[in-house]
Image (cartoon, rainbow, N blue to C red; front, side, top):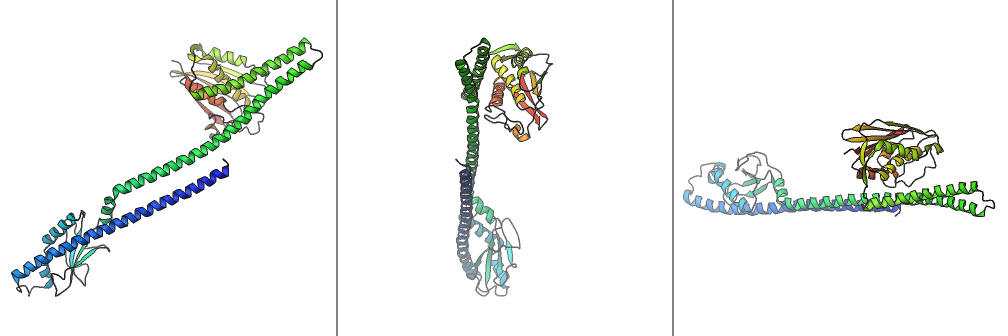
Length: 422
């Protein structure tokens, strides 16, 4: 998939996700508004029932007292008729019946006023009312002057949100699932794109690495077949070339096969207790560094007192040779490679240090990834598949150890390999 196509997919999917989030928030807001309207409707029904009961009480009151209270002020007469406890009881009962179980404030005021009169409620007392208070006219019980019953709910929004909390919680959970899934999908697409690019680089490198020894073998064979004077010296020379290139080709194929075996998880180690110091000496000796194109300086500082460990000899040799080969390839004209060992707790630590081109912090995060090849800057003709350090890390971890790296640009790199002694 092309890079531009991936960008378009990410852009359109992001716009769709933002649209989905906006739509969901719109419906949540509508749900809260609808719940508030339902709340208001229940309050209205409760107040209508309260007025009906007040009217009955008023009728009974008139029958008992007739006109004996005509000298009392209208406000006090209303107060006498509807005392705090009676009105509080009526409102509480009706609100409970309508499932409006939240704190409220009530007040009886003349129609011409809003913040004076008789106030009180069962839990909270306040002289301040919100704009969206509920009002009921008391003209049914006192016709000479207009009075209103004002009821306010300070915790109305909280009650409404709690009333639909389960629906809100599920909406938020599903929305988070969509966002997380989207993020994971986009991350997977980007990762797959990167792996695809790395795979293509690997195939190109592998093709080049395999074609080179094949071409050399073919050329050497042609020289041997077409030469009129097949002297023993010429035969020995080109036979050596054929053998060396065949070994090189076999090693390259073996690396690819080992990587495939590691990915399947079928690799089994043949552990045996060996002298790691002697193994390092033998491995570096067999590398024939004196025949390299660059003038290599190899220094061994084997200072570990306990240097016997159970390892797979073949793979441990490959670990050492890969690290040295890596130090050689990414060094300047005169590579200086130092291999040292020491004991750390119950482990043996051996390090491979070079004076090469080094790495920045970002490169160090990827050098152990499969197929990753470090940018070489002004050093050219660095061959390989990008699986050497991946193989080293996998083998070290399979031995129960760990590997780290410390590096600075143009100052060299140092690899730390920890292997358990027991």
